[in-house]
Length: 250
Image (spheres, helix red, strand yellow):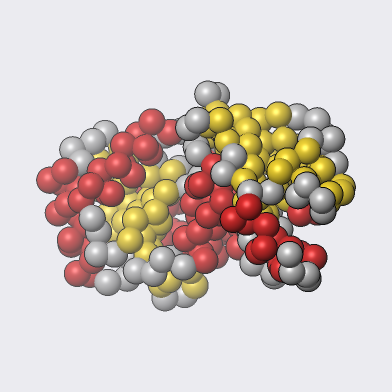
């Protein structure tokens, strides 16, 4: 059984979540509930849960204020929110879990199953640090990316990515230190996550960091990257690329 707390300030939401957990997630043992940051802090300290369902906004602060006070962390978190916004993008980017209100049963079961696999993971603290770093950036450009690997997660600095290349259902990250990192997620997922101000999908198989473009060969529409790789711009992306980054038309 996974020792669990629910941190949520709306009693109706607490009752609904508890009922769903009792019905569909028998591996969950709810130890208690808290409706504010201060109450949650004390309850977590005394009960030492393995998992917390954590509402993002609540009296006395928010979920991230609470996590800051509790570091180092030795429990898993599933964030619960009514809004699909930048904050949830940052959570996903940092390889943490969230569910949207009203809670979908299938999403709840999937999130609990993922936590069950990761419980007591030594990398949870690093994933939370990645999230807090991403949320604190003033430009809303995410800084650190958690890439799923066989051993857990590889954390990479976004600004150090030269390019991403698709290979079937996998994605390869080519870094500016020469490393090649493989992810089990497809390129479209990373295109959705990485900032369009920096990353551009020039080809169905290639997503590039424009800061690492070395040359643009106008005649044949070839981009040469800092790692020496030459990539053709897909004809359907050429006009947008020239307009966005070079300020010119074809």
